[in-house]
Length: 229
Image (tube, rainbow, N blue to C red; front, side, top):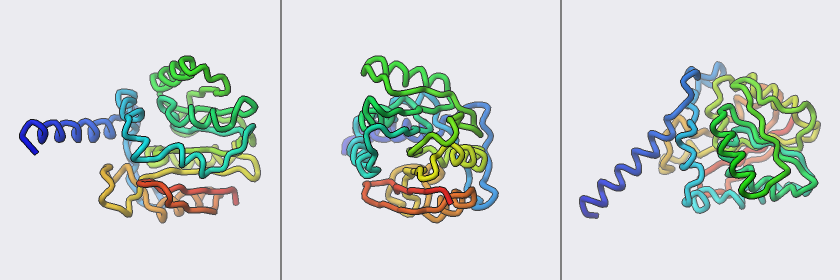
């Protein structure tokens, strides 16, 4: 590799690391009281281009991830930590016009980008919600599925969030986490933006859930399916 390409690769890597470190100024870092895991900073809206990067299809296989959830047309789902709407768009297509997607984010700028996507794609079955760091503001007992893609590890108030997420699920609803595998050091993501199955199980089950399924079919992420205990 010549010097110019080496410099280009280094700069690209720096952009990714910086993007993953961007957070809201009001968020405080901390550790989970049960697992001791350090909370990761929230990705700011300046990192939205990383969410929509072309390589994501290959690195994460998002369409396969959604297919593995076996969602039915007419389902009511939530994309929690929706960002610019990358997964929201796919969920909306999957549940169809009879279904509904609640797209939750705590950042107004992310929701602005999401709404731009919805208008451009003429998607009409999505409701955007500005949540709080401790409450997604979802309607109670309404959700068939709540999807959190690479976002749970960023929660600064995970216990409160999980309690509200549990309240929003139907009795047979599912909470699904997609998280980069901390067990694999070769995955090129900072450690605080990864989780082990054991960490997720310990933290989420403490709030009235049970880990009912673990799927490792994706290239880099766990699919962790929790149901209400």
